[in-house]
Image (tube, rainbow, N blue to C red; front, top):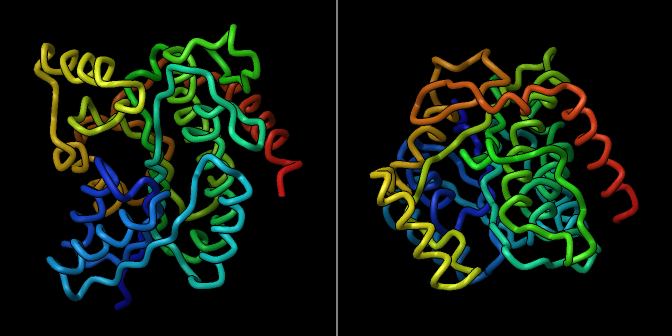
Length: 283
């Protein structure tokens, strides 16, 4: 029987790397996506060093650049006939306003739009699996989302915390809308809150902000390791218990309700249409 094949974005550190190690133990064939060549090489070396029978391939791409994502997908479709699990994990929080070279606000591009394109482009490979799963890594912060994430071009109207929350809400909105669009396919679509994780996440905003992020979860006694955070994601990727399920939000190995706003059908539709419009002209 052939190995199940899993693609993970943001796979060179934190939760993504921990998930890769856990799935390697379960004899998965891995496709790892990262922005940094050296980090990609190092994580492949680490995984194969511990599991020498594991097949691991990496691709270097910046998920925030739509042009790069489209080229990445063409390469993957040339190299693979099937993908069984797609884990949309790469993400970041930017307190300061930034635009990508393609004119997309960086939080929107990194946390939602790149994965929107990646997922849709790779659907033909997922449809070739008899038990495919798409796992979108969201956050409890999605509950602070106020509505549709926008492509904010004016720095004076940018609120980094709100934009991050709206991006995590977008992950859940996308999950539910995609699940409905794939309802006649053998593809389960899930969103996950991995919890407060001790990683370098948010360190790009400076040491002070990163420490505040860690202390917040420490005081709540909810700070966990990347390996602990990976468990729910690995469960959704691998467990027979969730086979045939879809459109569900998980935290700590259990299904739970996401925010009330995340179930808004009009908002789900608006996000999809906005995403299509934003990427339409980028080739």
